[in-house]
Length: 315
Image 1 (cartoon, rainbow, N blue to C red):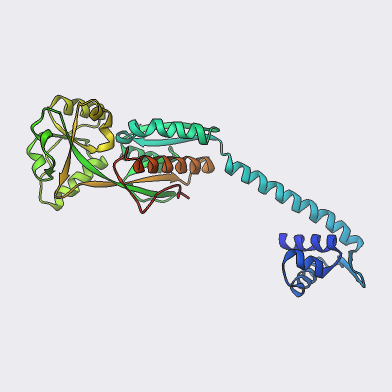
Image 2: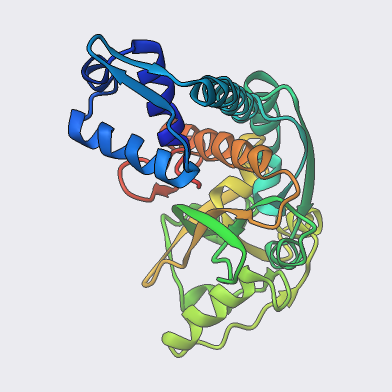
């Protein structure tokens, strides 16, 4: 016995006629008759009494009708409740944002969540992407924006975009007036990078290895300290354009494109399938994907979206 058979029986009992019920249910009458025959054989009772004017429920059939009707109504109520929950998710969702993206993305994301999903309590965690990856694997984050994330079980992800890395200098640095610099040439100057195993460090070292370059650089895991070193002219920094937009707007830094080759990394919205609030996590991931896509399309975030448009495709 299944819900389909219950639905068929209820419709036949209410229609009083197989042909009318078959028309309403949009199935062939022979198939409908066979389904009812199978149901009666399974129960071992006659549910419908056939006569010249059609059919009516037997005494046991009437009892079965009452139960079947209540079951179908309860199923409909459950469906409505689940749909309502999916349309209006609530609860706490923890979101990890890389330090280089949090300053520019944090406010737009929080604002969009307050407008679109006001019942979700957002907990934003800022850290280097490698640490965020570890937190996600440990089940301590629900959603994260990750650079070149490691594939592992129990996550779903949407690759959003590819972002080029740039060389940042103080405004009075000799390189500030250059239109671009070759990847190999930039290591002739003091450079500061996050330490291993940070993704930024890994990306630069991989590019260096493929181009026979020795990437000598000071290690620093503090973005504010990296910013101070660059502003002071004591070192050059390698970051995406998005990381130091405020400093550039204030005239404190200059971004110099890196060529031959241009180092880049991929950004993905990653969702933990171990989340205690899966609907809330999916809602947050979709809002984040849309906010990021809008910022890229507006030119605020300099990156190339994956495909024509990487919007709200997280499952």
